[in-house]
Length: 527
Image (tube, rainbow, N blue to C red; front, side):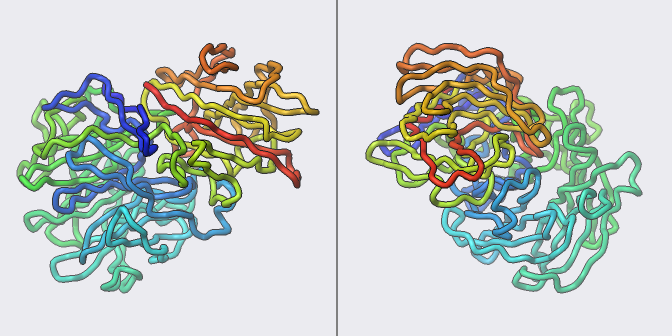
């Protein structure tokens, strides 16, 4: 399997990816992104591909990735610097926020429609996806509206198809279509259900629709059957309002790639077709695969079709798209803190306050202020986290802890519904290296101390080595060279709709007025 993880860092502080064997000049190996870019959607504009994904309550939200070859992807921006409504996201809203978005290009602008299942469907646009995006506009208000996708028809009319979340709407398994105003900012003509999964044998959890038009046919690509066990269906009609006929075009089949669905259909300038989809990989999140697409009798066949029945199954490896060779790239991990802004890989658990952090680009250090809060970090908004980048990797962080005050703690954390961290705690003037963990963090009030070792100096280096299956082994060093392993190991667990994350924090006791800080000298991610 290909692993691309944060590697060496140049003088600019920009990460240089490291690639391990498994990918040749002519072929690629899935997944093309072994990181939690859930519910991917993509669009081609000339020779450029831009991808967006769900980001839930992480801030900044709506990550934007760029590729020239559909295999190597670079994280280039976020469309949402902060989440709205602002007040609602001052604290973590696990599992809420930005669900599956869609990105399109129309009238010389990029358009992202994204849903918040508690508020409705929003729109943000930009002339340059790497630049500033417009403030979100609420296009359609309502609870349980999810997975929107716009479509500009040949007659100039604009449509929006979306699904429903049972947890908020009280029903699901149907796809709904409205007609929008010409500027795409509001519903002009209320629509109706165009595809009813309850009337299709075996269908559950029909969602994630994407609407396309090809050779006079309207196609709705939509997954069904659930994230871990489902499949990709396609519905087609000569009329946008239907009726639609259906076919399953991608399922797990005899492969080990479970639930292959929800993604994006894209083409190349030479006429090839490809499909990007995700696979739920537990602690690693929803990782991104690329599949070839053939068209037969007006239907897409995705991946391999060994028996010729039109229902494809995922390919683990295949020839690369016929596109110009691109430089190897992957979303970043390491950060040398050489610039005045945080790297794009970092996300907070809620809308951040500027006082939480600062960077000294001369000394290459990140300062994290100790933020008061509960002992259990599940509800802490100031966790600074990033996605797991590979099946196996190591993260090492150097901490200067002379700024910590009494009853404060800081360290390196692996975070999900269960979490564990290694770092330093100061109590009554004494500092200790501690390993703490909690199971089912949303309901368990207190962490368990697994290790506690006296520390007599102002600096320590902490490390976590993540192995297959999310097995995490923590260690520490007082000289930056020799590391002492800390028992027991910890198994990472996903969060709510997201994979496990790794990152940094500094925390003070609830109600603290004067607080300290920790300085992070480095954050290195290695294969």
